[in-house]
Length: 289
Image (tube, rainbow, N blue to C red; front, side):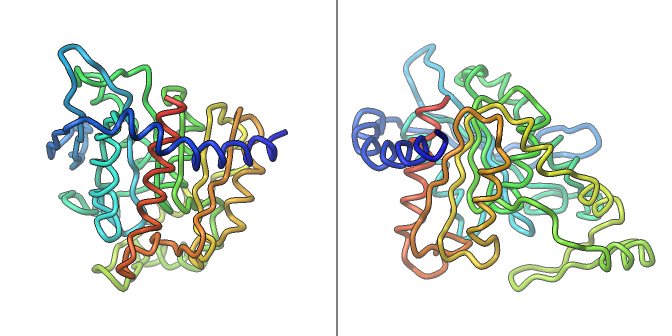
């Protein structure tokens, strides 16, 4: 039954996008950079809101970024997608994890639990935004942000729909990194695109203590998985594993983006995969929020 729904849902996305956008793609929007008080730290965020008529409210989506990235995301992809969603009548809030982007904190204090807490703090912030219908809020994430999307949706009942871009799932064996962190106080993670980040023993203890299949089984909302077929970072088989684990989601389709890498080809100069992904994302949330 689920496989049949997947095929129907993909067909819906492809055939309905033009119609939905023709009727909904009319809003102007505003963007505001914020610092949200999370108690022991501040969360840098950007709020993107459609401009509607007086008293009009909109669904909203909390956007989670990937490991080592920022709320702007790879190639500023989230800076493209959030306004496109706003034009279609969907508000968004995207934020920086501890130690990333404009955060003034040290990444050594980041754990998955902290990332989940910050996502929920951003949801709480939306309660004070008059243009947001707080009963229609979704969550999405890219790569590690996808992993945290799954965990947040599993541990909270405030979101009505979820979606991931190349979402990570189960944890790789990081026992060696953990031992180094225990010995030195941190393990230094290096990247090609930014300065290193220090991951604490608490980071690894939090990550290693998660039963991802059990978490996924707690999710009872619609959950779309968007996956590039040429992703070598989060391989396509991961999407199949997540889909299989979402045993209690009423619908959990996979949307395959052909010839697409982990960053949705944003660094190739070809924006078609990002545009397709943004369209599928927008249509999904229009249909499920």
